[in-house]
Amino acid sequence: MNIEQLANIINIEEFEGNKVCISGQLHNVIELLKDKLSFKILKSITAVDLGDEIELMYDLFSIENEETVVISVKVQNEIESITDLFESAKADENEIYDMFGIHFLGNEDLKRLYMPENWEGYPLRKDYIQDDTRLAWNDDEYNA
Image (cartoon, rainbow, N blue to C red):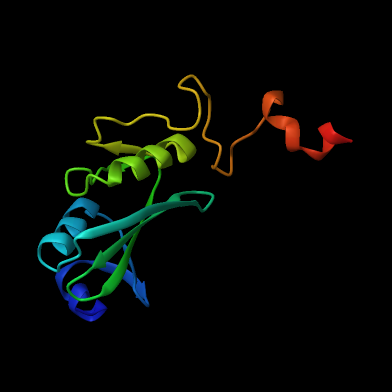
């Protein structure tokens, strides 16, 4: 499979190398890649705060074809979960929820992993203001 074949099947905004940017229907795209194109392994889901939106990158691998594809989608606050397709997605979705505040619709076990349940804010977002002095042990102004 190559990106051009994939482009004929799904609506792709752009692609470079093995990274495919889509604008929606994430669940359908991932399901198609898994069921029809043999991408049976989800290696990871990664999030990056771009300032005005969060980019999620789904890294899939096909043992059969020895190929990797990265599906990229930009979101504001929520997106559909893929935990029904990949059990391993639960951990990544929970981490992204905890650090970025993205809600994964359909993930029935969405919870914080690192921060306390009552923690306010999402530490890896660019707009996060860290004003809790318990976390200031490594800040220069507290070590001066």
